[in-house]
Length: 64
Image 1 (cartoon, helix red, strand yellow):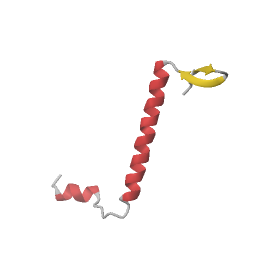
Image 2 (image 1 turned 135 degrees about the vertical axis):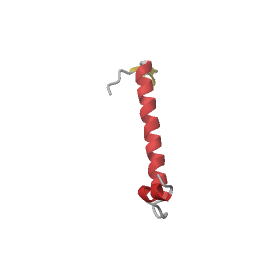
Image 3 (image 1 turned 45 degrees about the vertical axis):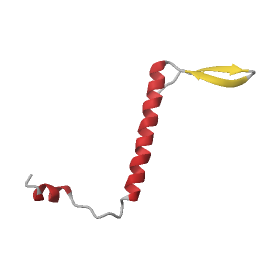
Image 4 (image 1 turned 90 degrees about the vertical axis):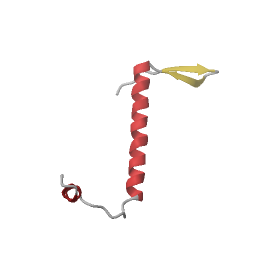
């Protein structure tokens, strides 16, 4: 991804960033993906010791 931010200063200090809307949407989507990944990793860690059943056994038990 390549971004084209415009930085606006106030009193010589960086105050605001302006992005093209499409670039903003790309950043927003990447952040949402990152949050989803963090949640998935958290759930995986919390459930790692739970008893599981292989999918093929579940399918056989359900006559699929």
